[in-house]
Structures are given as C-alpha cells and as structure tokens.
Length: 224
Image 1 (spheres, rainbow, N blue to C red):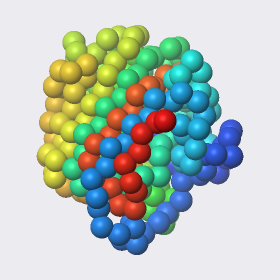
Image 2: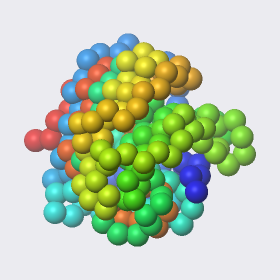
Image 3: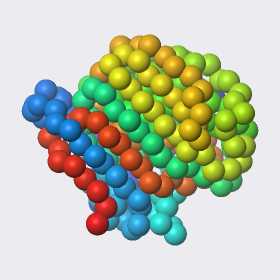
C-alpha cells in the first residue's frame, strides 16, 4: 500500500535534519545548476533532510535506505529546484518487500500541515512502476496515481535499475534503464526539492544521483 510521505523529527546522523515548511519565494531567482553526488562517504549527504520512518547508512560508496513499516522513508538535499530538470539515479533492490515502491521524488515541499507535496516515480522489486502526486489535501496525505501500477519489461526484477525523470514545464517523462516507460502532463506542482524514497520494510541502495536544471539559492554542486 502506498502511503503518505510525511516529515519526521529524528535522524541517525546530525548532518541530516528533519524536513520543515518554508517559503520558496524567499530563495531568489533560479539559476542553472548541476547537482551530482556519488555517496562516497557521509559528507555526501551533509545537510540533507530525512524523516523518521526508516534508517539510512553509507556503505561501499552507496546510500542504503531501509524503509519503515507503513510510510515512505525519504531523504534528499535541500537544494530547491525551480522548473525544468533532468534527474537520474542508480538503484539496487537488496532485500525485503517486493510490492513496496522505491525511487525518486521531485518538485517536493512541505506544507504548513506538515504534509509533503510533489511527485514521485517509483518501481518495485517485482518489475512494476507507478507515478504519484501528493497534494496534502486529505488526512494522511494519500497519493494520487498519475500512472497506476504497470508492469514493464524495461525494469530488471530484483536487480539494478537506473531511473530517470525529465520534467519540462508540465510534461513529465519517465525512463527505466534508458527506456521510456511513460509520460504525464500535469501542472499541479512547479518546483521544489528532489529526494530518494523507499516504502515498506525493504532495503534499497542508491548511487550517482545527478540532477541538471535550475535551482534557487544554490550554486552547482559536485562531489570532490
């Protein structure tokens, strides 16, 4: 079952903080940015925000997220991306639930009711994918399915999968391992943060997060 992505309070590392509401208008005009992280060590996620649903660790140069019992475990940088972006990340399912989703979020932010708003592109270990939107309008913040769960031969079951989101204005394109799997036209959310998410009790590793686009209040960032 897909549940709300909620903000939490605790973190396994003081370098990572809980999510909080903010006014993106205060961040200034958007500028071109290249944000690349390879998770070589914990410094790669310094200043990232997370919730208290699951746990995380850096191991063998990859970020491991351990999902919780009900909601999405989420984690991501504080960079606020505005408008168009091209997001890619490597994923590797390791163990646990085969029906829970894992993947990426974008144009995400927290409203004053402490609900996450934004979009998500998630896959399962069994080879399905879906596209979600959180609006924060109903108790529990259930997602709206922009693409219902769909099987795809482009997804490697129980294995490594490269996920990509190309968002240009209200046109959102989704690729798995370089193969286009779906397109959605939706203009509900226009900007916000990116993140990595894992649902249910499963462990997934992530590597080589690469986001190209425009951001407010941030310069281009790459690992040393």
